[in-house]
Image 1: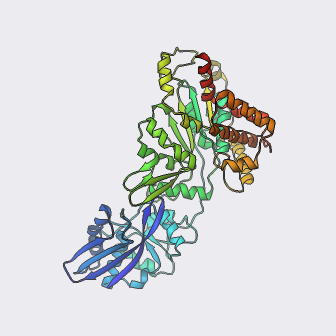
Image 2: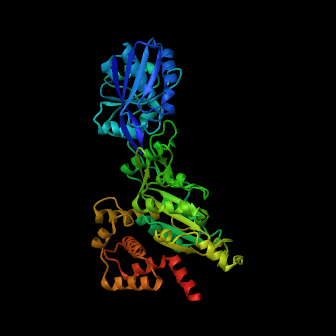
Image 3: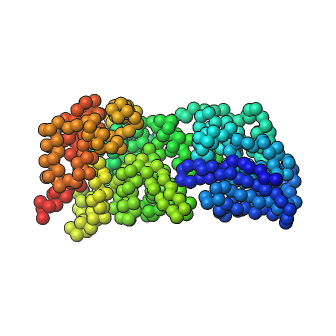
Length: 509
């Protein structure tokens, strides 16, 4: 007899249908697995046999062959334990064969028969909904996350014994379905940062338009403090964004058992010793890297020049396209990576160039070598480049705090709404194709001539031209201006620290 049960495998952040075929025949009592199973899948033979016996069922005194189709897709993970066990029980008559028809089954089994949660259940739930399945059978701890997919019957069980009852019942009691509630609360607040009005304005512009930003300043000027509070002024995630972010974190195995969704915009701050693989993702079974884990949030790179140059160069394509593409011999995997890059660095190797309290100890060669760690194309992708000045001692005497995060977020949300209305979808000025931005928001000839003159003076690239235009459009949105004016272009040009520094060096030479 052959029983067939629908399950799922993971490729990237998407679930792929896998049919689990189980056949019993005369021969030595054993379980043979075929269909490119990896180590974790092959180990299921031990777990399935023990779980069936410990649950009070009889394991067949026969040869059991399990085929995972399609056979050319590699299968990894422990999510096939439960469907294999149900297939064996169907073959022995302990479970009606028709009971699992139309259901997608995923779950890991313990030796005692308990059903344990698996990662990426949200991707499996989306797959089940897309293929028109009756529902999803999984561990109880996975139910909350799987039920984020509306219109899907999700049934959670704690043990193999409960499987038949869960599938036979017209309805199955489990945690109530809850709507996505995005909680952007944080103990940090924008008002914690003293002074730095120019930097605060630049970061508000970056948040409003989704622009990458780079901050240069001596130690203690507040670069890290500002970066860590950036998520507090970003708009709350939409339901679609929250689902995508949750799916990425679920695939990466970062959600604790019982967690439903990622409520806040992610903030990722990898160490400067991180490898290229950890940054963009990889592995024999590719998993998302830091740039994908920061999708729809903030990727903060502190001490930017300390990162290996090869690592920074791997970020260029994901930042430009909003997606990471990883090619392997058998498959091509894509991970979303639409994130805001926030970078911080010192002005020189010792960190004190331009400081009024300490002298810089670097030679001109050391300064040049330090700056050379950052390539021109990488800096070109920084829409906003600003320099932070040290705070005057009198700043700390001022008792009055600045604006709170909620006040700044209100302006950012309003600017985002203007952009959504202009482009007809949830796209920011930073990510919309430039041809559309140019059509929807053209520059007055006089304003454009000012931009072109600055290009010639600063030696800007065509990419920098486009990004200055984008930032100016965001500044105009914050001012609720329909047109980009001269003041908006001028402010955008002021956010080009590295271009100004390069011109100053040429003049000195």
